[in-house]
Length: 101
Image (cartoon, rainbow, N blue to C red; front, side):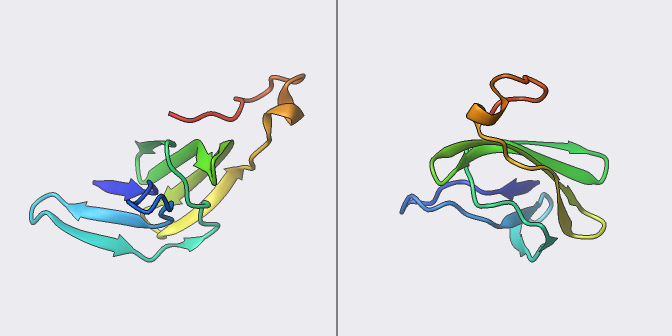
């Protein structure tokens, strides 16, 4: 199992990827490379093959609609879509508006 982000008890967001070994239940903090997403919470993550996709969430209290992919093989993040605030896309509707949850 993999976990990214979230909020600690001091209200700070976490920018790290953690891996849980499902056999030993031991956590490991992954040292990732590339264009690491800003720390956030209330985002969406899904897995497809050897990749983990991260979309949106709250970054410093502001909703985002950026999209990142994390490759397990290379241990690297890449940004696929930059954040566009709602006022920039209200007219076009060509991609999802910033969201969380």
